[in-house]
Image (cartoon, rainbow, N blue to C red; front, side, top):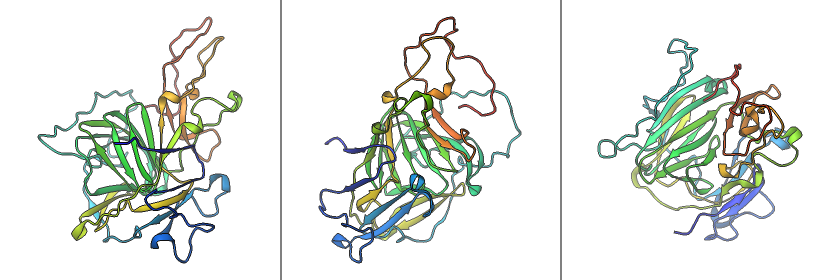
Length: 343
């Protein structure tokens, strides 16, 4: 199988069309009266229409059938998914956990959505404020099923096993030591090669962005060109009798609808609201070469900022291999107490 192709950049304006349908991107306008190949134009907005241009997120999708063609949504039971942080007594102690067990495929088949377990969180997806952290443990691929979240953005961190993710924008493979972000409203399906485990951070307030570099300058940490977005790919596939299931995470609960065609029918798209992945090996580490150990914020890959300048809803931070030289300093990171939580 040929390796997947990607577009390079973070927060960039991209344009992509499946090579099987050349000229499928309309020329000169977003929503022509007649799209090429008889496609339907849809805009997926990741921000308000009137957001400043630097924060405005949207992508135009050109698809075979509209995404609204499905049955009404109905509730789905998922006993391991919750946003009720107050159901148990508060516990201020430090906590650790062993690796979560992966279901044995000979006993139970569990796909990526079924394997989501809430670990912790804060805030409320209904109020669009806060964060949730999940673990996933699965052993089988999602078949004729896709998911999207209306609550926030998913940052997915595989710990064991490769994820083969199909999105409305195209396909991407996410291996160990890579991360990917599926933003709010984007449909995706996950295939696995076997036993798989990892973590997900969902932010409810805003989207992930690259941290400000400040005195570091123009370069360092995670560089924009190392973020990869899939190229357009579509399937024109019918699933009889409403056999395709669309799962929506809405206000902390799961709902499902059914349709008789694959949702991955986007032939072309253009915009800056996209899924993406990043290889953590590309992170450019900075640290002191004189004295003291700099604050762990220098290891921030992605951040979701709050309305208070410099205060994040959630940071994704790594401690990668690095050269670390200081004089008159104890090498391991210092102990410290702080007002936010670490996982």
